[in-house]
Image 1 (spheres, rainbow, N blue to C red):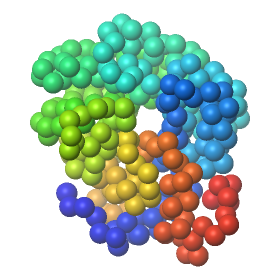
Image 2: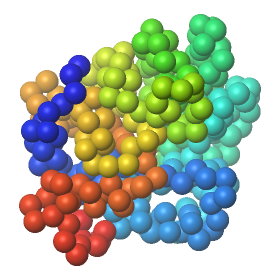
Image 3: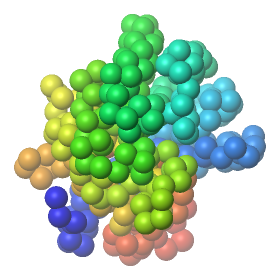
Length: 284
């Protein structure tokens, strides 16, 4: 898949508009030093943006649940994060705790070492165990709980490994595959987060999103401007075969980013006629 032209990006921005664009962002703060005021601000920004979710550490879920009460913004947390090195049973307990505390979505890191060893049965087993937690919760949940599988592309790197990890997540009926934690430390020259190529490989591996293949792709790590975000959305399959927005876009694609308001402001300045001007988040 070739990098989209500026015209392609402008056309996608026009189809989405600021609100449609914002609704695809998982507004993120996974810092070890995030304090209560930081999470409250994150939630306030996400509400004003109309973001898809806030993505936060597990210890902050209860606070976000309180701050976001009566809001459409979903709560996302992480398990096995950021190394993927917890045992499957620990990841299961983390998922149970997250859903019990009010999370709507969990982003789980796979066992990266097993994937690098090409021991994909271990990877399959842990994904299956966490998804079983989701399925039990969804028997009673009013709105669906989702699991995103983080494959950490900066470590897998090879197309074969990245795509096999994605195929396994699809076969086990994960809701999304996700590129990165944003905390990886690859060797020099390897991007630590999402790239257009990596995201294209991921969507190719799981196939186009449709009713019988409801798996999304989330690009995360290093996305700090609207142009990059739009590139990732195109790579992740936001458009159907006719070039139209693909159904419920927030189930097809997501962008994970810690700079959501800045990205949205950049979107307005680049792609909205008249630019952002003096607009605030709530104006979008």
